[in-house]
Amino acid sequence: MRGISSCLAALFAATALFSGCSAKSHENDPRQPIPTVISVAVTAKGVEVEPEAVGLPLERQPNINQNRTAPQNQAERGVPLDVKFALANATSVRGRLLLAGPIRRVEPLFANGSGSFTAGLPTGIYRLSSNLSRGTARLLVGPSRVSSSGDLLTP
Image 1: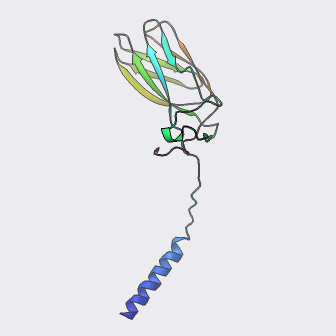
Image 2: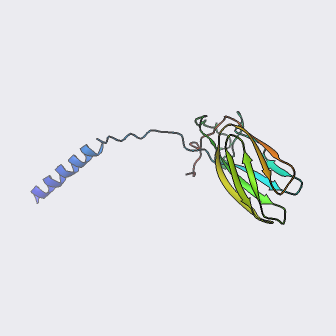
Image 3: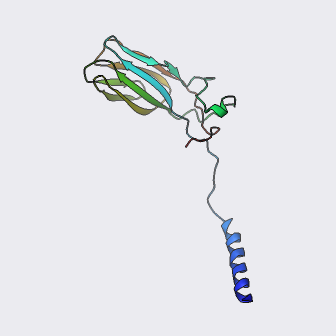
């Protein structure tokens, strides 16, 4: 019995000794920002975008309630801003939405329907237009990126 106890104690000590000898480093990199939501409404008169500008310095990102007064951590400015577009087609015709700027993207619009897509947008000025309407909308993406590392309960 004494031999088994000594053997288990030695095994436990060896495990504890070698568990701290890992070659991996766990850097505390900032987490990805929570995507900014932009509403896009397409009517026969034109394309409406709300808000018209995102990623501006001193702009407050939406926070989880318990963090509303905490300072916001800045993420790397060179990365694209994660934007989730919430689309609404107020026409009775199927069409497409064109996002044009530093990147270009075309998304389908369903008749009297809604949809969404997510895109990583670099800093710049974008135009949103549709084959269903006459007008276009402008979207400004600034250089500010807010990290979600201070927010709890986020991925």
